[in-house]
Length: 209
Image (cartoon, rainbow, N blue to C red):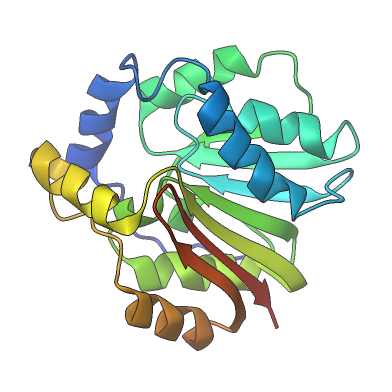
């Protein structure tokens, strides 16, 4: 079992509590956003019956989609540090027996070694206070041959600019440059399969060796 014991960042949790009803967090994805998500999901198939980890699940928009993808024999284990976000996610996924939700940092979520097939970090990686610790936890819980996905609907320049301008608790929540990410991925036992920082998305896919 992996628990790094890193305390929750209360200032950041309160920041996201205030964001829970905002346009970027609460509504369903736009058709354009959903198309980007479906493109990533298509490369992970088959997902039926698999166990997915979703750190930083927010209001559960992706959680609901992932639960449909893995089906009743699979499971989505999702968590977020924001109580209001998790409350919204619980409402969105009510009745889905294959979803496990928790209000907790990834580093304090109980996970057995090799218990996860795919870790799907959607628009959350810059918000990890200790990115190396987060990768260590995910490396430990992803089975050999399993997949790590780090995915944003915008590119790295837009991500970092957005967070700097947001200020407050997320002003320093930046996506590491390409070289740093490659070194982190290799350091924690992953093979880098793709790192695409294009005009309309950021996508990193890696395999646990």
